[in-house]
Every structure is written in C-alpha cells, then in structure tokens.
Image (cartoon, rainbow, N blue to C red; front, side, top):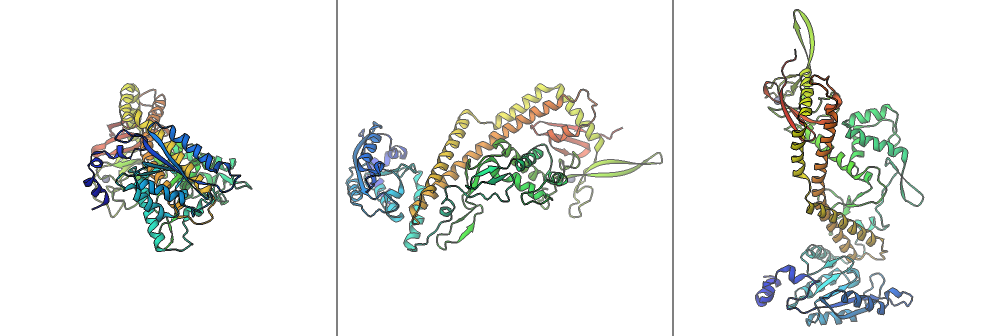
Length: 554
Ligand SMILES: [Zn+2]
C-alpha cells in the first residue's frame, strides 16, 4: 500500500477533496485560511552582487507573495552561496524543512531546482517527503514553472528518480549527458558547409545565401506545382545549378532531403542523437524512442511555415498514393504523363499504367493509348489476379473536361460540398485559441531551454540535466498536441486553397468540348479511380468527387 492510500484512510479530509483543489497553490486552503508561503533563496556572499543580496530577495518575495490575496508570507529563508552548485551552507534550508514538517508552511517558493538542493537524490527525497506529510507542503520552482503538488509534476519526478537512481549507483564525475554538451553554446550547432541556402559568418551566426536560397525556394515551388523529385532533379542538373557540395548532378534523393528539412522554416529539430542509457553512458542514435523537439526560430527562414507544411503534406500524399496495396514496391513519381501515378484500379487498388496498343480498322494499322491496371494487363508476374478493363486515354481527357464544364455550371453545389469538408477539419474557436496558446507555451519552453543552456556549468550537475530533460519532455508533449491541431488546420486550408484553384481553372473551360488541358488536370486532381465497365471516378484535391463512364471515343 502506498503512503498516499494510507493517508487517505487515516485522513478523511484528504480523501474527499478533489486533487485539483488540494494542489492548487493559487487559492486559499480548503478551510478558508490563507496559504502560508515560505520562500527559499540563495544569496550572494559578494557585496557587489546587489541583486543577490538577502534584503533584495526578501523584498522581492514579500512583494511577490503579497500580490496573491490567498497567500500569506511565512518567512524568507536564505543561505549563502549563489554560484554554481555550492549548496554547502544549509542552515536556513534545514530550518525551513523543520517548519514544513511541523505543518507551518503550505508552499515553498524558490527560484530554481538547482538552487534548492545539493543533488538529485536530495531534491527528490525532500520533494517526496514534503508531499507526503499529513499536511502536504508543496514546492514551486519559479524558473521551471513546476509545482510539486501538481499532477503534471509526476513526469518530472519520474525523470528525477531515474537520475537519482543512477547517481546512487555511480559516483563517477564523468556523468555526461549529450544534450548538455550540445547546448553548451546556447544554440544548437547547425553546420552550414554542405547546407544549401545558408552560410555562417565569422561569429558563427547563420545567414541566408541568397543565390542558393533561390534554388531552395524553387525546389519547394516546383513540388507544389506538381513536379516530382526526379523531374526537379533532372531540371536542376540540366540548368547547370550546383548542389550544396558543388556537384553538378542532382539526385531525386537530394531534392527530397531538401524538401524534408525543417531547418528551411527557421526551426531546428534537436536531440537527434543523445545519451539515453544511464547505465552505460552510451551515446545512441535517437530513433523514435527519444523525444525530438523543435527549437523555434534559431535562424532566418527561407520557406514559410505554411509552405513547408504544405510540402510535407504533398510528399506524404504522394508516398501514400504510390504505395501499392501489398506495399511490395513503390513507384517513382516521375510525372511524365499527367495521368502517371494518379490513376488507380478500383478493383484491386494497384496503379493503372499506360499502354500503347495497336489495332486494325479497314485493313489499316493504327495506334492508340490506354490506361490499364498493372495486374490486369499481366505486366507483373506476381500479381495477375485482376480482370479490370482498360480505358482509352482520349476518353479520359474528354470526360475530364466534361466534368470540369459541369462543375462550372454547378459551382454553387461544388462550393457547398467542399465547404462541408472544410468545416469538418477546420478548428473551432476554442481549438484555435488553444493552438495559439500552445505556440506561446512552446516558445516559452524553448526560451527556458536556451536560457538554461547558456548557464556556465562548471560541474555536471544532475539537477541541471534533470531540469533540462523535464523541459524537453514538456516541449515534446506540447509539440505533439500542437501538431495534431496544426495538421487539421492545414488540411482545411489545403482544401480551401485547392477549391479556389479549381474555380480559377474552371474559367478556362468555356464549352463542354474544350481541348484537354494537362496543367488543369495536374493542379486540381488528386487521383482517379478506374472501375469496371469504364466507370471512372475523378477525385479532386479540394475533396470533390465525380464519377463518369469513359466510353470508347469515336
Ligand atoms: Zn486491378
């Protein structure tokens, strides 16, 4: 049985009080009494450190505590020793803990974890002990915005306890943690030597190399215009543009990597490699099991956040689209024909590919182009289990233009349909506010991380590391929630934008038999499903769908 359970049995008051009331430091106690707040400070021994003097600290905390009508200042406790990790002088600390044990204090407010205790074990045992008193005493760490009676602090305590465990096991001075090193200069190090679009000045500041940045912008634009990475690579090579390494040959992979690099929107995804193993201190490559987090606005952006996310979505769509149902192979997004990689079999789900066919009419041999399921045309020896028929390319073209003409005639319904889909994924007012709040929170945590990392660390203080780690986890959690909302928001923006684009293209269709326009097709169509009996479904990027019969052309 845990201590908590024991307490709730012996103390019925605790049992009936909801956790959030019991743990809220900002309101009066349940019995209506003001909360008795103590402050703990580390003060400077050097006169010239005015801001660290005892008087100023007392003044600061008196003010701080008086601002809250539910609070009452109990006492400001202080010990000497403001620098680094020297927490030897503890007379004030020990006196304070005695008072807390005697039930005289509800909360202790202190600047930061590292100022509070000698080491992780010390901090953890104090936190736990105070928490589990018959009349619990919380600690509020200002800098970390951490309330030990808050349920959210549990994660932190877990991390702290794993560190304490390690500390007791090893007294090695060399406990190093990858992140500490990484952040020792305040900012993550971004090498720019082979990083297209950026360069570094003498002071190590990153700046945009305009000539290279143009290439980056163009790559992003080309992709959003419907080109595939192999085509983009081919064009760049043809034009004699150089890669970051000075090569004249561009590969599809190099283009892909540029498109996937979050640094182009000015953020940095850090903690790609970090020491996680407390026992072996082995530096291991960070895969999915470790938190990765954005440090926002670490350097100037070349691509807007909106465009960057739009590109990620487009790449994800293509990846999904090009994967066959058996996930055995992936086709290359070449974009040679407007129909390439956009047609799929409605019977078996596999890609529909182009086929040149010959026939004779009145003794005359002639060619025509069709689109046929990969499995049904027996091209792939492994998959021959589909019997769908081919469709004529010419009739696909005719039918597409007919659909556009119909959409033009029936614009009101089209707009209503799409708006319904947009409504489904767009954010409510509350969600929108939450997204904004999350962005602010992430910025705040990022600031805390960089502030923390700017601090000179003479020794490897485990509390510092635990603290940093806590912030990283916090940022990770915030980022996850943020990305979920942001994705929905992007989806609704995507649909809306594509509706506008489609409506724009409808003006190019003055009559039902307008000549096929491949640009319109590429820009507006997400995919086309070819069913049996020449039934064809056009699925537009804005979410609208239309089914037609693509009969043999005359
Ligand atoms: Zn098929």
